Length: 375
Image (cartoon, rainbow, N blue to C red; front, side, top):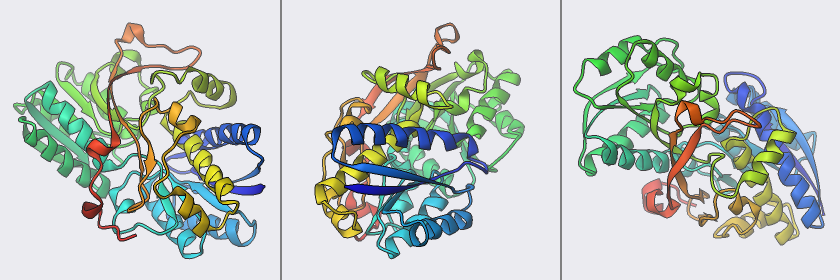
């Protein structure tokens, strides 16, 4: 069986630092699939430019001119929504990496699937961890849909588990200067601050907290991707006390995967490598089982399917399955903490965070009725 897979990755724009990881993870999966199955997978790579319109143009070209069989990739949810909707409307199967709940809700599509744990799953996990860690919290959240949703879920989880949110600020995103918000935290009764801020902005906020001397407060981070902290020194990164993560390279049993990523890629192993590997692994296996690359046939194979391949192993071996009602890959959420600065590994690849707990996906995922998706 011959397949042409289209990969959509941000090789330019705000998320360009993430770009190489999607291609590396995908190519590693293709190597394994071709070794195990009677399949040949060609890969076409397209730059989303971290721009929904540019990504849509690339998707149209990939399908109509280049003849890809199905697609994967996209990091920010606006790109995933745009290309996933068009792909589904044109009977092309697509697996994205957006975390927005809307992708499994009002924006869900019959041939669109999401491999990353949802914003709700991440926020519920960190909210519970926060309540267990200290009593009074200040919440800083990015002032757009992702941040607003995270704030609501985290605040609810904190308060339901017996702690208090003593203050909160919506912060511009992206943002270079968090001084005024850090001052608000320092002047409050908070024992901890929740950073519901994606990408490099989260590490920027931590660095500025350290520079302003706010080092004795507990820090909780939502949907932390350790790569964004690798630009800090060890001491600043070590300030992160608790975090919810979609994957981290210190999960038990992922040493071989880490080594392959480090040898093959431009970036040290982090979550986007694992999610890209899983996307290709699951898409191709579904097509092989179906004996077809038609979107309808792949849907029949993915809905309700429990992952049993290497993709499960690199996620620690916990239950993973494709939920039929909203096309979410229900997977464990990892809680982590930064290592002490002296214990942080830099060679042969960075390992700065350790897993402290694993929450089964079913414990934190929204019910099908709550999603608003009507698949």
